[in-house]
Image (cartoon, rainbow, N blue to C red; front, top):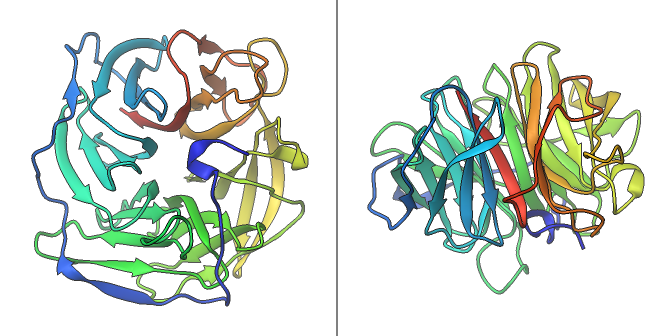
Amino acid sequence: MKAVSILLTVAFSACSASAVPTTTATSLHRVAHSLRAGSAGGTKGPLLFVSDSAAAVVYIYQLSTLKVVNTVTGLTDPQGECSDTKGDVWVTDAGADSIYELSHQGRLENTLTATAYPVGCAWDPTTGNLAVMSLFGSGSGSGSHGFVTVYPKRAGGSSHQYQNPKQYYYNFGGFDTNGNLFFDGRSESGAFTLSELPKGAKKALTIAIAGGTIYYPGMVQWDATSKELIVGDQSCGGAYTASCLYAVQIANKAGTIESTIDLQNSSGGQICDLIQGVIYEGKLAGSDNDICGSSPSTSYVWPYPAGGAPTLSNSSTDSAPVGAAVSP
């Protein structure tokens, strides 16, 4: 089976989803926690945060060199990541049902408590709200539907949960520049699902995909330059041993795959499993969780949108890398 964060993906039944306010007021507030960052060195300039679920840490790399400049410890099962307009990075921890806000240097700033297995997150540039994708619901194992929780920026506000009846498992998500949220996952039968929660809406929509097939959910990020949604596929072409990205044009509640971005490893072969990557200023950064066994898991920087051969690599740290985000 595919890597930890996308291992269990299920689905719902209908084209819409309703918002249900949580019973407690939960905003982005400061909470004490035991995360620890080492002595940061060389943290000027853009930094790449990579979560490693096996090592239970977050590695912080200098994006320009892929040299490790800090390590955050004290996590349980870190998964997906996202960054906000301050440059802080939010990390979901599925093992602790928590979401952590880390500063540029890796210092813990805030902690949010999730109600179920949090995997992905996305920051709304129009409101400052944080959306968190829970792979499946609370209860016994993976026996209930996942959902999206939106945490408000304003103090005292209530978080809300959203579900798409056609989507069972919820993986990763991203907002466009207008505040519309897109998130991927799988149906209960295992089919890839892409959903949209339009800004201000109380119902989510299923986005039908044309022009190709996406087999296993991966990263979701809006490209403001091309005005396309970049969606990762952890089983590119239906192959368990390959990952790639698709540029998807969104219009009229439908998506069309316009192009494929192939990504190579250091040996020139196709990468095995990029769970979540991040696009930043003409670069795509992330880690190949090499569950294929052909080479060690490695963090890479590729040219974007060209893809192809990496320009940087570091195979000295990662064991089971999952999430990626950039702090400018």
